[in-house]
Length: 537
Image (cartoon, rainbow, N blue to C red; front, side):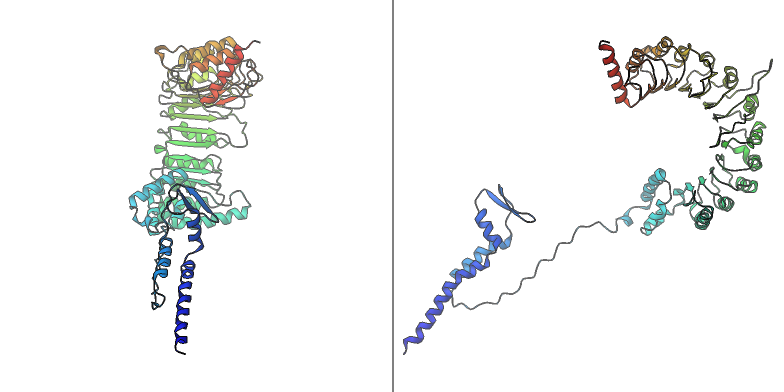
């Protein structure tokens, strides 16, 4: 009976010994098994686990995870250990803390110096204006609010009701809503405002300009575009309150002539720039200018509105030269200007000694002749730009007698205004011989010069003395009789040519009668002209 109890422990020990390998097998995961089978240690391959696959790649791979290296050692210790060894309770190891994700720093805006932040905002404001960017930036944080509140950033503002162009009731409601915001913005943000533009204001112009006169003492430029209800009291109040205001743009706005005249009488001594839309009331405003109301005026522009006005403009040349002697830019756009004749024995006026730009472009009948142009420019040696588009009565001989020697932009294009007129066929060479060394832009569109005359004129750009390149970068030869040889010679002589218009040129081959923009397109035109000229006809 004694040996029986001794056999039972041996069976249990054998069972424990036989079960020890299973413990090691269970300790290995499926990933360990695939790692050892597909890429064992010492081989020239390694495993890479992707989203839903296991890749076997050549070359040494990254080190295996620590859990993978310990799994075989744990199984070996279990095999060699005693079967009767007491089981030790393993303490749970603390799991490593998850790594914090490196996200954007929430406080980077507070660490930017205020001066640098104001400069950054200034670049954005210069490109897109202060509104609505500054209003949105002020809501980001306290530092941004402080930077966006700097009055120096609010020096140029354009105000337009958001519902402009819709129903009348909607416009009035939108203007009142914007006006309520301006009652706070004007004293708190616009203290250094210099340039203000109001667009599509129909009913609240007077309250807005009153706020401007109270809060914007540094205003220098005011533009009212498509605005109604501008009174004389409003403009006079603005002229008295804003002592630095010297530029006024009233184009496309309904303003009474008495209001403009009252403004000029108050602020005329400091006025530098004035823009007007021609109407029946413009005569009174021009009369104030002729009476030396604005002796410091430098820019004067009078243009027609959307609805063309066929009433001729009466503007005496000599009186304008006496009333505005410092004029630098004179633009009479799309007007039927009827200059008063000078009369026999009448001396010429003082001229415009500082005039740099004269624009008399028109798409209708124009009465400007060589005699009128001579009276205008006889004392303007510094003229740089001359725009005579539509002036079919101007001839090259009249232009050749002008005193300006360094003209850079000359526009003589005729766009449908010369159908009933006899065009000059010779004399274009006089223009290029005089200004070939300074001309950067030349427009001869629609002129009736002959092929030979154009060839002689454009040949002046290829014979510049000293080997220097011509300054010509834009040439419009639309609807002229220019020939392929003349065009190819011109392109070869002017490497800086960036624009060339050859539309409707009858003497050019088909496929080349178009406008070319950029150096690449102009050079492509030259290649096509040389190819077509070399190929047999």
